[in-house]
Amino acid sequence: MNLSSTRLALALVLPFAVVLLAPSSATGQISADRPGFGDGPATVAPGTVQAELGAAAANDDFGTNAELGQLLLRYGVADFLELRGGVGSFALDAPDTEYTGTSVGGKLRLAQSSLSALSVVSTWALPTGTGAFENERVSQSLALAFNGALGEGLGLSANAGTSVPYGGDADPSYLFIPTLSFGVTDRVGAYVGYAGFYTTGLNRNYVEAGLTLLSSPNTQLDVNTGLQVDENRGAFFAGLGLAHRF
Image: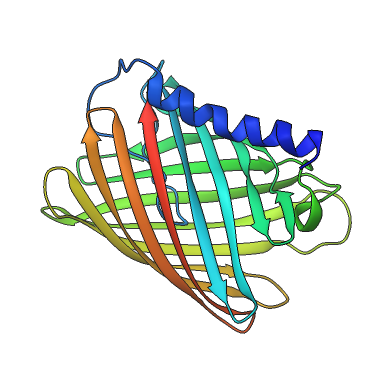
């Protein structure tokens, strides 16, 4: 591993230590944007930093690849607004190790009632990736995130939006991610969902399911699994993660 890769490794590993060792100060349930492809409408409480990170692996006819990091940092600016920064991941596809790149963005709550909430999530992907993730242009993703209660412990959420590259002649892509979630116990939640990413070329379609465990008032663990089922490839994937606020 060269010096650049070593620095990237430290950048991804050190936040794990910070997250696990930092003193916790916030209270209440954790509303994490992991596991799963979609984002929820909930924003982080004002003055609170929340870190979400994990690892995933996928297997198809061509072999196994993995991703380590998936670090998203969220900071509550106001009750209705949070800022977000994605540190990125190592993509491990032997014999190559690549970096997925960084991002910045925010989440703004547009409406909320006792039974539903609606937010807009904006993310700018920066041209900082390497290998297959290398890109010379910034792209922006803009999505609406909705969540509504269907009954006690049962909810339906959905993301719908678009991703647009700046400059060049690349076409925009679109996403639609409906998810059904339900509470198993006071500390355990579960979900099943679909994620579709549509372009003028080959579309990507996923089905997924996962569990979350509130292990302490400020720490939540998760596990998820699913299948990619489309013309592009057929693959099985699984992941582990952690969300912690301090």
